[in-house]
Image (cartoon, rainbow over all chains, first blue to last red; front, side):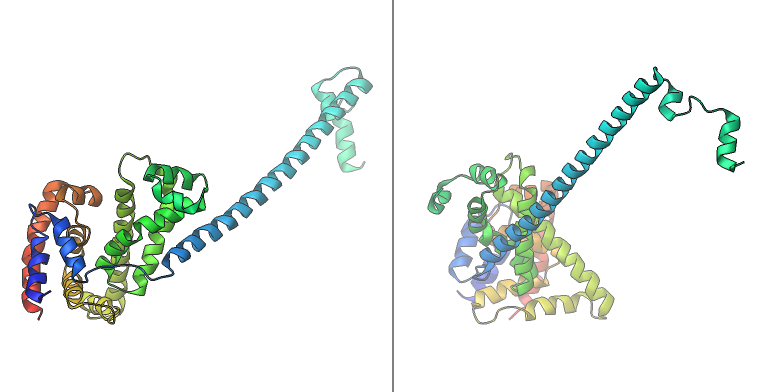
Length: 117
Length: 187
């Protein structure tokens, strides 16, 4: 295609009323086409799916850690409940003081305990 | 599913399969739209290896935003918007780089884009088109790319660029004026 015709097509493509798909086809036939290299498709797929595999592994790690911490929290809660029940059985009642183990403690004895005198 | 059967699926079926983790479905999307993305990215940034990186970024971004695609617009429009945003960001980045490190600024940026192109497989017509594109301001270059390389109507161009139709029409006429000057100077 002669350069003058190419220039005409370029200018025509900016006319609002022109059918640009016809211009695009004419330019394509004269060698104005764009494509990526041969390995483009594989590179994209490799990047995406190798990255998502890493993300998936990270998610699995976080999930397994959550499970472990959940179990630890459950065990802790169970221990607290057992302790409360044992306090109830030994003291005969379950008051706030008995929960904190202060039922037989007086202010003076706490001072003695803390100061060692 | 057999790989060949993916070519028969429509874009919504492909998107749904890709969201469900079907690698072949996403592979089909890349196959179907890579030339469209190449026209936008290479039209805007020149026929260089850097354009391939931006092209890859377009599909990576598409993959991670597929769940946001609601199917109200065509998938090609959605991909085109991603490609336009990434190329315009790249132009801004290059502009910042060249204005910081070079006294010639934009002029050198255009030289860099043209010099980096693949000379062996280029026709005279393509060389002329590339030179014209490279000399246009980015806001006009994107309009020319959408019209001349993608064959979009003014309405479709406005939709993809998120611009009012009036703005597109005024940019078309201003780009035409600028192009006349540029093409007169080109041999």
